[in-house]
Amino acid sequence: MELIRLTKVRKTYKTGVTAIQDLNLSIKKGQFVFIIGSTGCGKSTLIKMLYREEKPTAGQIIVGGIDVGKLRNGKVYKIRRKIGVVFQDFKLLPKSTVYENVAFALEIFGLPKDEIHSKVIKALELVGLKSKIKNYPAQLSGGEQQRVAIARAIVNGPKLLICDEPTGNLDKNTGMEIMRVLEEINKLGTTIIMVTHDIDIVKKLQKRVIVLDSGRVVKDYAEGTYNK
Image (cartoon, one colour):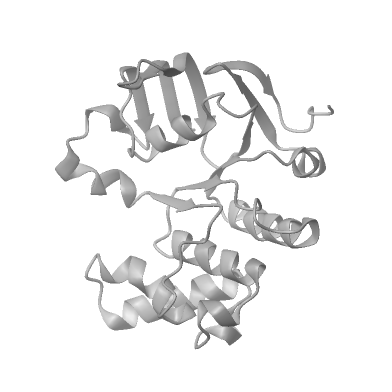
């Protein structure tokens, strides 16, 4: 079943730069998809449009049945509740504990404390950090900080997890540990879209691979067929 569909999408910035042009793409529920390509090919713009940080100049973007491009600013929360986002830099609150960092994502929705507690513990168990709930970010390794960021992104049970270079600040071994966490989340049914420059990871995991160049899809490798 389809979760995402982009039809003839174009994004031109006010500077006149066209980052995405005539892009068509379909992603099914439960897929794990890598998006790769050289710097400036449109990867970041593409994922920013999916969670509505950017709006398309033309074309249609449907995510979970919602026409993202037509959402008014006051209604963006409707799509954000369905999407978790993980960045290269962990974006954790330095003066908050691991528990508080993850709980914050639910507190803004006004959930009851007991519901917040159970969801936070479940998310931290999934990323293997239940024992560190009272620690602060500065007391964690880079890999552990990224696990907290992942827990925060998945704590509300999103249908889609977008990862923008999540292993970019980590060494190879730690990066693969993070990928194993993401694979476990994917096995539970969450669709994952990951932008990366790390071709070693792409080769090892053998997921679907979409290659962008000059804002267009130039290759779309089915799962298990990427061998460059």
